[in-house]
Image (cartoon, rainbow, N blue to C red):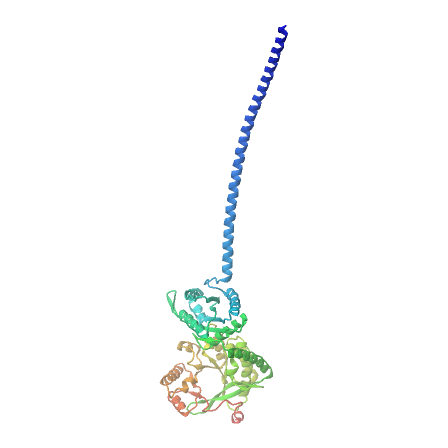
Length: 501
């Protein structure tokens, strides 16, 4: 009775054990699988972390490179910006920054009701430094000058190099006396000696200043300062000039004169006056000097001092000089006596390679013999860098034309230079003649010049002789010829006795 029931229980237990055994196997297999999966996952995570770390390091490196590139770009931009506003040779503020600062200064001055000061200055005879010592020496000099200017520590005032040997100074709120004082300080700093290649170089500067509390146009302020600088340089080295309204009026008059002069050439308003040059001892007329005059339709008779500088600056002197030469040669060719005719030649004419051909053409056209023509040239027009003036004079002398050096003693000729060209005459400047009776130095200079002329087989001509006392002194010194009011003033035509014999 109990056996079947027991068997049934045993079977149930066995079945349960089998199920438990099966579950055990399943759980064991699952555990092993989970362990394997965990190991695989650990390996994957390990490699993933390495990739993440590598990526992190790459990103960090890239970020550092980007930062370096950014800093490099910023430095390049800063340098470019610096270069835009600074001079490459001296590292001073440059022209572009000057104009930018000038406009800003004007705006501030207008708000604060202040004046604006613009100062321009350039070096005197800087070209001679380049020509004598070379451009490297010139650059070294500019750098030394800029160092001195920067060391002046002019508080809020600003200095600029505009280019070449031109500099500028900019400020506001200065009185005229303060501005001039600053200019004097600049001149003083610049004028101290410099040592370039073991050579002492001295140089000076001229300054033009404009101080305005009304003018607000930057280009006008610059022009006014430039006009003042031009005026300063016209007076010599190391000069300081403050802009005045008359300077602008003078410029406007010059422009009007240029216009009138162009019309005068077309309308033939230029005429020739003649002044005699006589033998100092016999007082016989040796030659006449042809002197240009302008019969201006409104201003009347104008002397050369009023228009020749403008003619030379504009180039009209070539046409004007040609007209005078032609008139003088044509007139002289009609004289009954063979007196010579002397004509002044400007540096501009002498520098033209066409000048010899012009002279030859006029001589042929008028029929005047070449040996009756004398051309007067100044020292400064001959002794230049160019060889053209010397070559021109040598060709003219070979044709038979006589050459005189005018206003001798006021330039920088040397005995060797004179002997190289062998002039026919030396004209002694009237400033020495006027002082011959009152200043021993003038007497000694004339004595030296006449002696020099004789030693070089040249003749000496004294200009500006007005008194018998001056003439007697010149005779005692052996001066060959004389010219001046004592013998005759310039006249519009030669005396009829000369013309008709």
